[in-house]
Image (cartoon, rainbow, N blue to C red):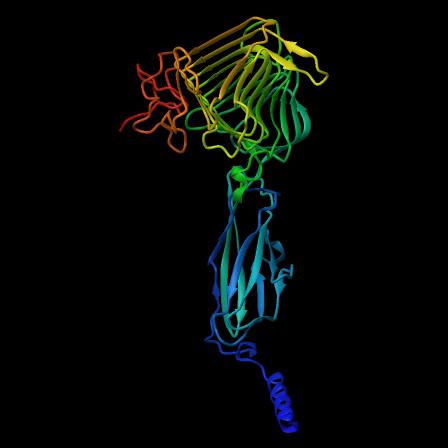
Length: 453
């Protein structure tokens, strides 16, 4: 028994005193490392704004361990990139052991230094690896974009051009009697919860090849598809003669919020050829206002695609308004018009309501996606003609159904070859569609006119 116990302890001591093959550090220069990629790329980034993190894995496929004598950024302290190497946040790490068959992880960020340049510029560097007399590198590539920044301030008469993007934080107010003109191709980026308030006038006129963009300031990684990253565009009481065309408004809490009550029926906001989407709350939210909307695509909104309340004058022509492919589910109708609004104190605000819907697609996943509410305390005029409406009821002079994809959408809400919406509209004074394609004598319903090849 004593001999067996002695033999056992001897074997354990021998085993503890010896390195396994994987723990033996080899200096053989023929041993190679491999990388999860040879180039780490980032999307275009606004200057002075930190990127999301990228990952790089370094593998040792050999049986023996390898000593990385040095890992560092070639640009050193002047680099816009930063590294966390196996948990160490340093510009340079030395003598990092990678066991045989193991790997290390490197986390990479970039914070682009402003260059005072209009056009996007290349921001590059490389991570250098040295071991056993070998030198290898992984390229780091991104593009920076300088912008014009506004933070919690008011502006009066200004013209914004497309030379550089405009970056808004906090709130920007266009004062009473003032006009903000935004030229075609201009990009406006909003930081978290930033908002644009219009008490004067907004004129934002793009064209089919140079659309105006209103969106979040973070667009690397998943951020280009996340709703609710900024507040919205608000038209305040007293604002009038506003125009938006060929614009894209997305990833906010509310796209357009309009509260412009007055004593006339002249449109205080005209929106044309515009996409409004990925809103955590509402696409177009309005109260006692006068709005004309045409050739617009409104989709993927958490509460209302269109919610126009407390009366007003609302005209929608050739629009596609749908939550068919939405991230959101609601038991309420996504498109609502009403002559009244219940205030927080319980009082009911009721005003005259006029609604005109012509050649629109109003669609979604619910049984009924449109409702018009009339309390009977004010005058309500509703005209619906040649619309495709998701509904279980028949609506005179319109097309209703709950059949799957009854309108005939492609994934981007254009119309497919066999779309029911083709040639079903009535002729209006709109000669083109949302992207500038010419409409024919038998126009398609919705924002898009299908052009056959």
